[in-house]
Length: 355
Image (tube, rainbow, N blue to C red; front, side, top):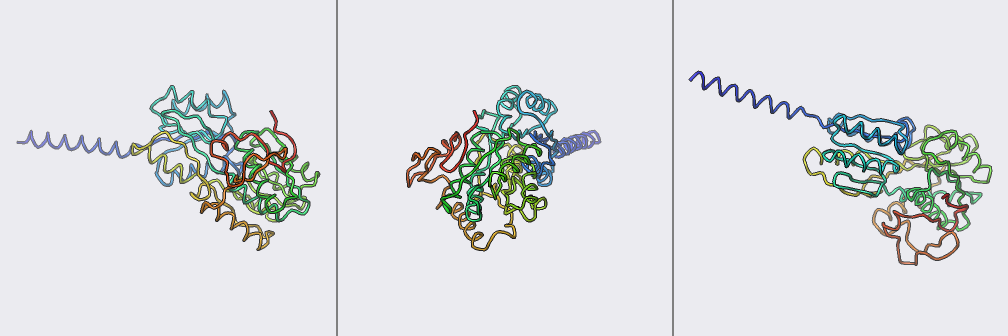
């Protein structure tokens, strides 16, 4: 009898230990950032999402910042995989092929690649419809510009960035047909010096509103000093330019990161492509700056509401290209497939797209 009791206790203790070990197993999640977490833009917002993930699910996370796209990215992604991370988020377009390459060698790990379009059984892709926010920025810029010249600082000429330029231009010219958009490419996601110089050049060329698809607050700071207006990028940058910032697109990754890691934890994770926008909350807008007039706020709010209810799409026709040729007829809208490959300027954008 005693042997039976001891045996039962041992079994119960063993099961208890196994249960505790299972409960204490924390999913490990890795992140790779193209810029520093202190850029106050793209990488900063991804890191805000990472921190929210830790808080929401109690998982252990690690990140590597300022990782160049290409061979360096492949090395870092492989290191995170070898370190036992269960889910790895690679957060820049140029990480696409390195992510796929590493994922092939680590089939049990789940990979999530931001802004890419190539997937596999253990690689998902995700992005935001930033162009919806750009349409709101364009509406504000078109109504508020006095010179009818809007300056745009571009990072790299990939479809994501070109979509933003086109969406802003279409929206601005919808409320002000005289608007012209000048673009300067800096060939970097984060380079405060180049970004600041680009802003100065655009202002010297007559731009009285500056927007950007780069990640530092340098353009806003230049705008503040030069007495012109500007828009923040990826996060609310008002503290850097309290007078200049009219509003900012805010990238909200927290909900997505929490949902995808939770799916990995409960066994429901599958390779998918997610492309959400304002309606889902993946794209948000910062509060309007004091300089934005009431009528402009109301108009911008209407644009936002119409995007949410589906009555308006930033790329609905008629749309003409830079040469003035009709490329999207009235009543038609560019498909997601066309938008994902967009490599041309709309009418009103000056300059050419770098090869």
